[in-house]
Every structure is written in C-alpha cells, then in structure tokens.
Image (cartoon, rainbow, N blue to C red; front, side):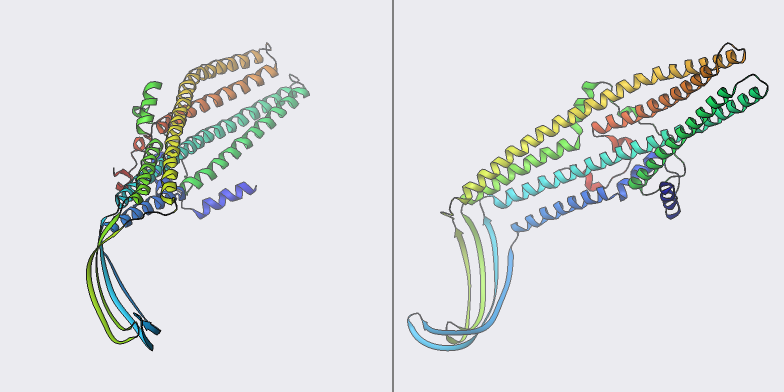
Length: 431
C-alpha cells in the first residue's frame, strides 16, 4: 500500500508523457546527476589545462608595503634611525626554460582531460544501457501484468463453470475448492507482477525523472550488433571508452614522470623589475631603481627529493599500465558475457515459441476431453498454468534478447550512437 501511494505521488507531482526509448535515454543524459558529476569533472580538467598554459606567458606582479623600520647599522655604519618605510614595485618575468616542466605538465593535463572525456562518454554509455534495460523490463512487466489479469479471468470463468456443473451434480465440492485455490494463486501471481511493475516504474523515474503513461515498442538497431564474437571483441577493444580513458591515464602518468625529471635541469628566465621606495635601510628619502636581468637557478642538492619524486612517478606509470591491462581484460570479459547472453537467449526464444504453441494446443485438447469426461479438472488446470508459464517465459526471452542486444552494443562502445542521441560537441573533440 505504501508503494502504491509512493507511485501515485510521483505521478501527481511529475508531468508525465509517453516517451520512446530514445527520448528516455536523451532525457537521462541531459539531467541525471551521474552525468552531471562526470561532466563537471571533465570541465574542471579543461580549466586546469588552460591554467597550465598560462605558465608560457609573462607573469606580472605588483607589490607594495608600508611599516615601521628601526636600523642601527647600514653597511657597517651606525645610523640609529626610526623611519616609516614604504615600498612599491612591479616585476615582470618571462620563463625561457624550466627543464620541460611546463611542457610536460600541459601534456599531463591534456591527457587527463581526454581521460575525463572518455570517462564521461563511458558513463553516458552505461547510463543509456541502464535506461534501455529498465525500459524493456518495464515493457515486459506490463505484458506480464496483462497475462496475469487474463489468467485470473480465465480461472474465474472456470470457477463459474464448475459451480454450474456442481449445481447440476456434474462436479464435486472438492472440484470447486480446487479451482478456488487456483484462482487465489492467480491473484497472488498478479500482485507479484504488479509489485515488479511498480518497482520498475520507480527505477525508471530515478533514471529519467518522469513516469511515462505508455511505452513505445523498442528494438535495437541490429546494424550495430556484431555478427560474431571475434568482431565483437575487435570492436570493443577498438571503441570502448573505458580503454581509451585508461590509455590516456597511462600517457598522463608518463608526462608526470617527465615533469618530475625537470628538476634535474636549470631554470632560466628574464626578469624586469622597477621599485619606488622610501626610507629604505635607515636612510631617509626616496630609493628608486629598475633592472633587467637574465636569471638562472640550478638546484644542486635538495636532499634527494627529486630522485624520490621521479621514482614515485615511474611507479605510477607502471600502475597506470597495469590498470590499462586490467581494463582491457574487463572489457573483453564483459563482451564475451554479453555475446553469450545474446546467443543463448536468442536460441531460447525459438524453443519458447514452440513451447507456447504446443502448450496452447494441449490446453485446448484437454478442455475438449474434459467436457467429454476423458480428462480430469486437474489436467485442465495444469494445462492452463503451463500455457501461462510458457507465454511468460517467451515474453521474458523476447525482451531479454533485446536487452542482451543493447548490452552487446554497449560492450562495443556504440550504444549512444545506435540511439542517434546528440551529445555535446565537447564530448567528441579529439586531442
């Protein structure tokens, strides 16, 4: 009852409309927090890279200060002055060489930006698969609810017939009790189907943000479904965004290693500086100067920190390579599992169709034989259950086959493309 009230509240508080699967996917991509978080992370990476490029440009600093200064000696001469000191200056510096640190840092951030972009695409692919799975499961659930309703009606019709037959002395009280038990079972099955339906509606609402009043038939574009396991694996390794993200993470780690090695090199820059000071060094009066200098600095010893940081970065490269290998293994495993589901569920569907046809034929035959007194009531009831289960199994196989198809397309990294859903141009920019 609480679940029913929850769904009713969702319906009342949300403007609902019928949406296709493609529209549902687009709505989820546009508004789901999972994508918003990944997009924010991607945009942050873009800004970090832009910030690093600024190190190539001149750096201009304005500084100033005012305060009290007491000086006893200046250059060996006793002055004993108490003055109010003021400083004002501007400094312009241009980096000429920093051991390739800035270049390596820009490369690192650019690779991280690409890794974030591919991570965003991967999250969108997975979200699209989640929406497709819920959408098709909801379609299946709706059909199962319809079957359950039909099953109740058919059992109630049998109950009415058996009650009439009992009144004529053609059926016993135990026959009536037996059918009533089956009616209760069918009603229980209907409630279970409704419970599953409402759970899926809540899940759909979580992904898309609204509950559709009706669902449109959804089928995958089989032009995107690989025709063999070999082709599926080739496409997955080539196109899957998780692998591309791992590759860029590895390249970012290599650039970080180059950045850490930059401390082995000297730093060279040009500095322009002008000062307008007053009461400096205990000497009353203005103190103004300007200079242009070529500055060189070379870190001769820093306690071995440069070596340690470089070695740590080298190990991070090895870590990134291992993650990249593991990611590829996971993608290959996921593709194999998706292919197996696609193949076997597709084969099951054919047998379930035969099961339905034969079960219906058997039920009709049992019904005629029961009317002639050659079959028991239990035989008819069991045959009806067999038809119900056969139809339910066929529907499950039908929709699971389509879900497996979407899963296989997702494994090859082409699900969003197969939906013809437009994504922001930033998602498609190559390095």
